[in-house]
Image 1 (cartoon, rainbow, N blue to C red):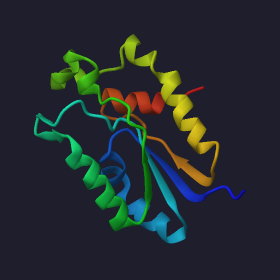
Image 2: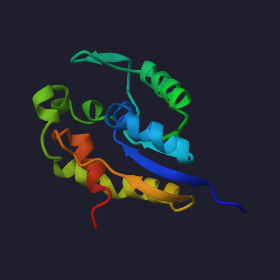
Image 3: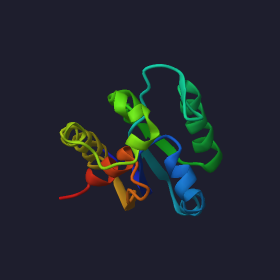
Image 4: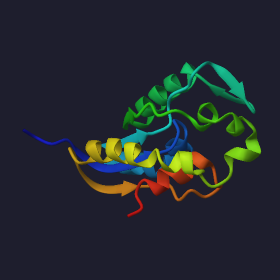
Length: 147
């Protein structure tokens, strides 16, 4: 059985983060080989608009369009976005804080999903967000890879 081969894997907290953060790098890497973007927090409980951001199926279609346009593959893990996990996260100032214990307890399940995927493929490099900006989902994504 041949294992899928990727030039790079990019771990993206949300559907738009990989494209907004490293579109130029993705474009260059795709020229060198296949690129896989793993989007983590891609599940929404309803189509709503929070602070000017549409949370709904439109985002899933935007990801498909971006992947097609830039030439990368993507996987959505369907984990629940922060604003649906806690009512407090619906207030913008509460999203940009370190994760609470309830969020950190969720890390092993996310870690298992990601490591199951990357354990079945070969890749040259993996890119993980630093969590700059303090968005709780970005910090959690970074913490998935802490020892």
